[in-house]
Each structure stands twice: as structure tokens, then as C-alpha cells.
Length: 257
Image (cartoon, rainbow, N blue to C red; front, side):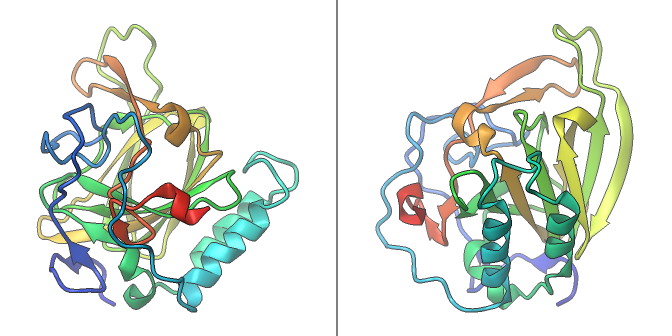
């Protein structure tokens, strides 16, 4: 598969316009549509799905999901003594990305900066998401709520801009530490000990797709912080709902339990 997907409407990679009945709220995306932000404040984890998730197929991507859960199974997260971060990174890097394997989870919406699609909750100690990034769009500067994140590029190219964590209250724009561009197949690690960052899709025409492992799932439970790129002001946002759950738009997290 060539790096970078062109947005289209047919399976397995789907582009839709959200009809979730969520009120306008703060979003990690800097250019949200008020009625359809994928990263909105919500009093509920999700809305009821009209369709149950289909049984998980048997393929290399689902094997990866199971292997990640198995590694994290007896532990409390990436910082636990029982977890080998290098092994997790290697596992995610060795997966041979095939759109037909993960495409059912990769629901995109070009009107948003990106969509957050929940794939798995592991043993309750992690969240595994597929994010679909619209051309020339991206996230706000954000932290990871004292959690740890591994990101694998499944398709396309993504740019990470990393910043020193701004003081509170901030008196100036965040200071850039470095900027890195990742292509399909690469894996990167991020945590609050390394600063804060934003992710963007630099391609003007093609979507990008990435796989994210968060452990523990603090942002889903407690939210995270975002920063204004111009003035450094900080806000708190919640991250407890998703564009889709296990391939079902508006699906319920309970269906993964």
C-alpha cells in the first residue's frame, strides 16, 4: 500500500460526517466543526449504537491487538516492572500494515482535524485507538495525563512538534524542542516526562492513519491539558468519547468489555 490514503467513501477505509448529538465543546483539534468535534466534552462515554460490532476477524492486526493485551495483562502499565517497552515498540513496528486488516476501524471525516476510533481497551489498563488525520490538519498542543503513548504510523506521514511543558500560568508561547516527521511503519514513544506535543498531517491531499496505545487510559478517565500555540494559555479537555467504537460509529465502550 502506498503511503498516504486518498479520502474515499467505500470500505474498508471509510469517510463520514458525524451525526453524534453532542453539544459544542472544547476539542484537541484546532479547527473543529462545532457540531461534530470528535474530541468533545461529554457527560457520557458514548452514545448508543444502532449496530453491534461485528466479531473480530482473524488477521495479523487482530493478532497484534491480542499480543499487546497479553504483554500488558499482568501489569499496571508501561512503567511497571513486568513490561518491556522495547518489546512493545518492536511488536508494533514488526506488524506489516495492511489496510484490509485495520480499515474497518479507520473511520475518517475530512471536516475534522482528525477522528479518534477506539479499537480495544485491553485489560482495562490501556486504550488502543486508530486516529485518522485529515490533510493539512492536526491536533492542538497537548499532554498525556501522566500516561504513556506509543504511536505507529499505519499509512501516510505525520509530523510531531515537541515542546517544553509551559509553566502555569504561561507568559509566552511554548518553546519548540524539536520537530520530527514519521512515515508509514515507524513507531515513536511519548510521555509527559518528554514534554508536550502536537501531531499534524503535512500532506495537502491525502489522509494519514496511526495506531496509538495509551496506558494507563488516564485521558479517557480524567481528560488532558491543551495549550494555545500563540500565547501558551492552558485549558482542560475531556477525552471520553470516540468517533467510533470497534468499527461502529457511535458505538458503546461496553461492547468492548
